[in-house]
Length: 220
Figure (cartoon, rainbow, N blue to C red):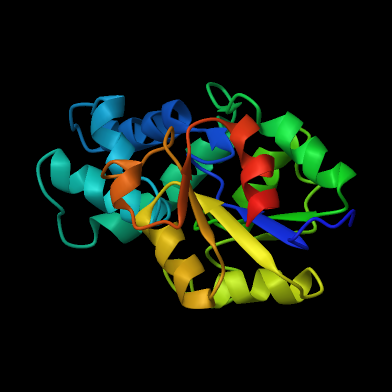
């Protein structure tokens, strides 16, 4: 691997590899409209992202007037259907993502995605941008029986990628906690959807742009 210190680099998806805020907010607002709720702003939806679509829906209901009994389970399938049908209308890779992946690939580093989004939707979304096939593994919130902040998805990523030293890149406290509990360095991006400033997430390192990632990893 040309002396590079990591065999695997894992990434969160929403708010880390891809800016998906517009499409996630549209799915929440479509679902709220079904029960005659007013739409939420994208800024209101932003901190709801990170623990999966069901959590996002529950928070959207809470923010728009409360969570009626049974509403989350009743509305959740419809939210997923709408989101899958409109999964990449507004979503885009963050600047520098593809170049960073190209650089890691050239160094012989395996890349992977560990997200709390359900695996099927993660694969559909990544495929929209030609990123699915270049990942050594894609682990969703329903893939291994637990989701971040549990370390189990990170451990599964390392195992599936053949072992060796790994690092994990994310934008939320769930990403940082999962990485720390799995014993791997955590790198927070400052441009995602965190519920607090990136410097307050407790990550080992913070980057502001993707062109900082590979040089940082090379020094660790």
